[in-house]
Image (cartoon, rainbow, N blue to C red; front, side, top):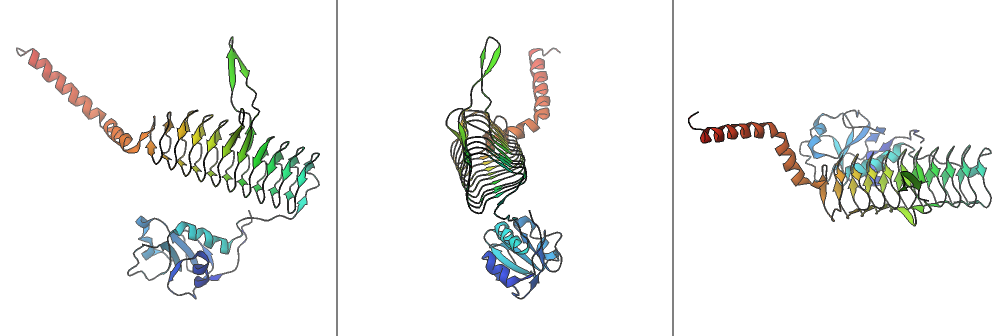
Length: 351
């Protein structure tokens, strides 16, 4: 990524760009962006969590992006009010930095293209990349150094593959997809049939479909289907080091955080969140708008609009009650010992 800095901007221009409401001087010159604790004069920062509102009185920043409902009485610093400060700050960053490097339309001399490869306008293929027979690189896609595109696979329009990405055969990558280094899409699913003590490999002959607007982090593995497809739905974002098994179906606009593991043939509904190190067994169904807390182990179906946590994962309020009781286990044990002693004395009054 090219992080070269752009020229300074006036605060009024920034407020207009992020579609926020300016409370302050529109002529203030902003030279850059920074975190609220590190910001200095000339910097723009943001405050997304109201519990950190105290920083508004101590920050040296020239301006702060805040929530629409943030109380600002007595605050002297210039503000941009926005319903989603984090998103507004992201848009502001784009005014000061090149957030995505662009490449020319070219195929590097060291790249290897197989027979019948289709390369549309605006495609860049980097050094030592390999594109096998029948693959299709659609308009504006970027394949960086050392990446591999297998037979009959497709990379959609304006999709961006960082170095050393592996796309196996019969994989469909949609438009505007970002895939980070080290990720492997279309590796064989983990399927074996045991006979007389020997594990026999089950052929994995399906494919993978990554839909529009998906972003996949570094060192993610997404297995191909046994039959049919493993699917990642439109707009879903996947963090680093995630394992997705064969025939898994992930819905649209999901968030899957680092080190999640999803067993084969599991289905995850739309707009669901799987926090870090969540584990899902195979062949279960997770509903729409489900939130699964970090390090939870999910062994059964979860209905729509649920928030679960723990191992095994339960409705979060129930899990919290159980954890509260477990934290007092020593006290309960002592009470049981006292009760046992009292019962013994009642049975043997002479003692």
